[in-house]
Image (cartoon, rainbow, N blue to C red; front, side):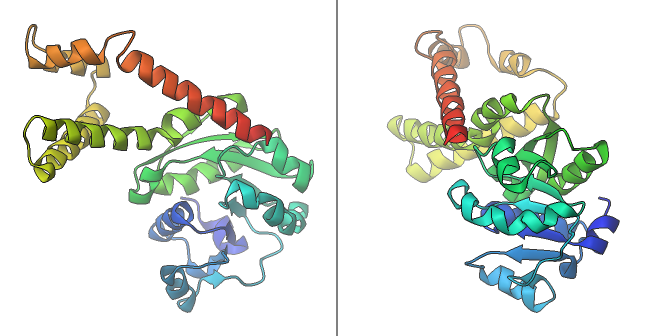
Length: 274
């Protein structure tokens, strides 16, 4: 991570909930100095207060020309929070938003046409450094700006740059909301195991370990997910029997997951208009 600009000009974090805290922890692990970070949060955690006692700037006056301002407040708080950032536009500040459903145009309407804005969509595995964040910037974003944003967000996982902001709704539906789908699958696998006679704790242990291991294998393998599935499936075997149900085009995963992703994407579009 290129720290020089951040150390010299400062980094502002507006909002420090679960995602903001995960990012802050990642930045500190990658060498960002405590005294270079300015956090505004109305309800700071004890962890944040402890960092402030060691040098982090918590709810203090902000630098006039920070290198980056990360906007991590909830969308409904945006109208109150954004006007306080307007003075930063006159400098060379890079604004990076991780608020779901808030378009670049929304920021531009408040911050003005000279604001350099990147919209990002991380997901909750960022809390353990295994997040996935998609980014898209406005026309003022340079390659250097995007590299800086990716450096910061790479502290909590992988990053990808989108071709168009319109793709953000699909990204939100697949990876932003996606962890919840996996958590629900774990729940349902464990419950189904209980229905087949397993104790609840054992069923959950098996479901958790299976999803964890399968995900890690898929991430590390050079084979496609389709091929990995085929590798486990013997003709006429137990896995094939289950997949006959799960892969049914009308009632299985193809239909259900497609409907779920479409619903999440549609809701993301609605939020962007509100």
